[in-house]
Image 1: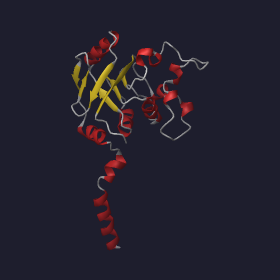
Image 2: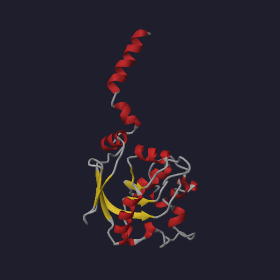
Image 3: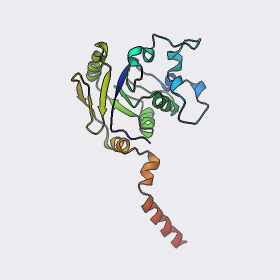
Image 4: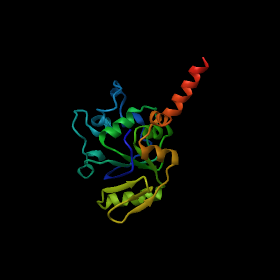
Length: 197
């Protein structure tokens, strides 16, 4: 898993609450188990017209958000089914961090497993971020080591992440990686078990 220490990038804003995983990646694209190749179908039903042309009214199609790697979203982002494909689509598109007032628990857990940082922000902080967006400021730095978000315009805000999540992301460890950290102890245990038989 790719580690997350600090990331600077373009910020896209999706002002919608309760965005569920079927909206993030519709069910017709869940036919594969590879983790790549989903970026083009992220928010498919919202991003494209029926004829396949991009919908200029959808935020990710706006020129100022081209190449966005940080997403500001509404409350309860990632609700609905537990499909991990939603996180794969966000990562494949290029997102490294999502800032929102709240996230669905399973979605946030899937993000952690895939190196995507979720930052829960109070509404007041999000309003400050939205004001920057309205003023035409579309970049941020998200620093997980310092738990700080900052901008070249002087914007600064602290955020909290539980220590387990923070450690996993900083070190780039998913469940398998965490287990392999104890490989020597596991091997020693297995040797003891064999001797007992």
